[in-house]
Length: 428
Image (cartoon, rainbow, N blue to C red; front, side):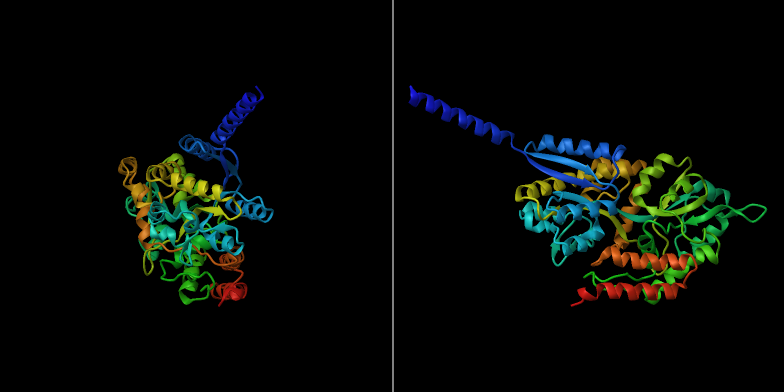
């Protein structure tokens, strides 16, 4: 009898173990850079739920962590405390910082299969410029962008301009903006011709001027900058001149956050901002608008921007593998296409643009493809070791020039000296 009871206990224990293993899940935390609430969080929650249905062994816990800047601070603080997220969407330009902090693993070290390698090669090369270094892939493009020019077609028509033609060169942008700028009888501006924001991400918008002027701001190793080059100074002089010489843009600092609102309210006829604002403009502009590549000086061009998936080093092996699976799922062509349509970000792979849904969308809304078409001329966003400190040095210089505190030449000379000082330990 006792032997029989022991046998039943063993069988019951076996069933319990089997049930426990069947229910066991790998939980991954996912930091996403947005404040709590709003349509994007609902979309992310739904995507996480759909992924869990298809992958019952994995539980995804989204954490809405504020701005990109707040998110990297929270992620690195958690990393140092030994409780990092498993994965996070952080700026592509945070790559060197995350590597220097020994906070992340390369995707190649977790995703070793042939299909994984094929997946890592499936993204636009322009996006991978901020995702790879040292022969390894550290970030996977998710919500990526370029800078584009938006214009109000109705105001173009009123000013006697072709409403279907955006300025294609720097000279054309000045002449076009002059015709669009309006003043009242007292000489006060009631509408500006153009706005290029200089708060929030001034270094990024500045690359929308330096890139077309034929110069990049840093090397591929992230340990050298070129802020004082002649072409860089020329680009800054052009930006300053829009406000102070040509008087087609408000002088001084223009707010990043209010620029789309100014566009909607017809306070500016043209604006430069991220393609990530495309859906916002589509939903809120009460007039016909156009979207174009940035005007050229010596060439076309824009920096890429936006966020990548990263996988954290202190996560368990099972969590890292689950995070890679999640990143693959989130960037599948159909899903990447839908994310691009929902948000305005550039769908990150050529395959996403070949989906039937995306083709139909572009057919009805052709401007959606402008940012994609600009990728062939795009360069990496400013990214170096000690990136936040180096970027601050450049931003400080830009604001000094735009406010008239320094000449463009002096501002860039000072910014370069500070960046060189910061990067000196990384020169080999």
